[in-house]
Length: 278
Image 1 (cartoon, rainbow, N blue to C red):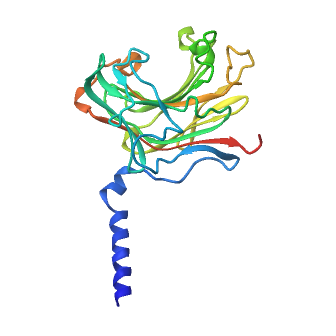
Image 2: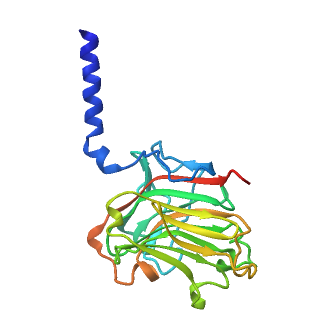
Image 3: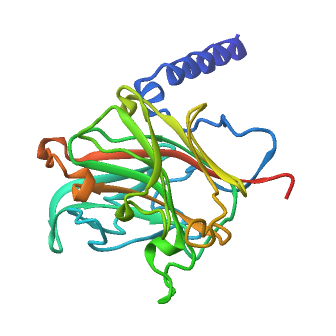
């Protein structure tokens, strides 16, 4: 009888966990992947620990960095914490340094870089006017004084601006095809309230093209034109960045709603795959 009672208690506990508000809300610790079978996992962070992001995998940007953004990026736990199965980047309304907001930008610079393959991130976007979360890459030669930002190449796997609220963007920036030239290459997918749930944001980087995905939908492809380094600097490795900007030249076009803070950007996992055929 004691064994039966214990079994019943265990079953009840499992049911309570399965249907608890946290289990429904968090959406974290999802082990499924949309990666096709031709890809093999090279690097990942499943965020199955607690505390700061793993320093063997992630570094931080710190300060006021770019794009006239309103936040100060910090390395504090208050802005980037692994908890309950997710990396949670939290933007806060607080005076810090010369800024009125804080947030975090983490990256794999100097720790992991890749050339080609599939980048897959399962994330739940923040909501509100003024948020500008992104998943993106930069060339490892960004610090070369002879190589400009655009010349190193930038791949925006996902960008979202809160004032718009119903679209996700992908963009490829290079020296000869940057937005400053009026020749930016990018696409978007309309999707109602993407911040209501977790979605998979993915890039599949081939020798001759880049395919961008929202869940299972390939909504933009950037083809290599064969015009040389200025058009396609992606024969060199790139590193990954994940950040939550506030305001800025795009995210702040319609101002910042101060009632939304603190606002959270949740990342369930990050997985980078290579081709089995390499």
